Amino acid sequence: MAFHDTHFHLDLFKNPEETVKKIESAGVYTIAVTNSPSVFFYTKKITEGCKYVKAAIGLHPELAYERKHEVDQLIELLGETRYIGEVGLDNSNKLPVNYETQKVIFKRILQACSDKKNKILTIHSRNAAKDVIDMIGSRFWGKIILHWYSGSIKELERALDYGFYFSINYSMTKSSNGRKIINALPQNRILIETDGPFIEYKKAPATPLMSEIIANEICKIKLESNIKITPEDIQTNFKDLLS
Ligand SMILES: [Zn+2]
Image (cartoon, rainbow, N blue to C red; front, top):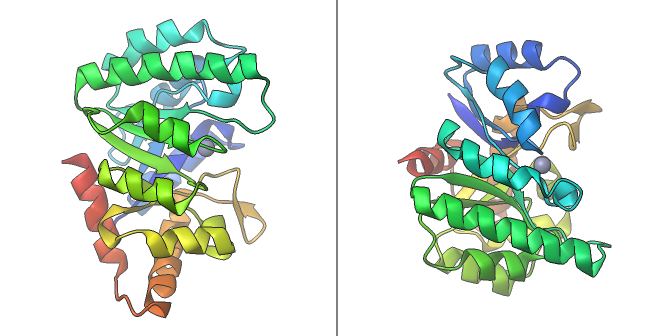
């Protein structure tokens, strides 16, 4: 079965071009996120003409303060791709000036994406779930995926009310907080991500080729609460995301 990975750092692999070939032959729909507009050019070039791998343009919140001038370039390039990421907020051990700058940048990116109306965003929200959800709000034009969500269940429920999706990775299926989040999600809002190479599977960086393993783990967790879902159900969510 064709599968998907909505958050994968292709450019951080040892041999990205070889990795693209493997994903294309396995047929896994992959959103290759980037951490800055300059990286986007590279990822776009090596995925040109690909059926399965799509380059996303991003400005990672942990780089946003140092690279704040790159936000203009990101906004100028929005017409080049439907996919945006990695963007968002990170408030773990950040100076107030850093976090406030992240917010200014994220706000500009959100506004520009909402104006375009059809973007798909993959969003980082470590220690910042409430602020991220507040800033996106309920009237955003486009699709929102909260990547590796680790906030409260209360905020998760608000994000569900706003129509957001959640992408789940292998680490989340193995942690108690991750399992709590998986259990709180309705089946129609669950997507798969690997976040490779930041996550490893069997001592190797995770790649989209393992996305079905993650889907199977999610189905097992749901079954423990007597909820029967299949990897095919999760794949249907990806089709809805693109529609
Ligand atoms: Zn990431």
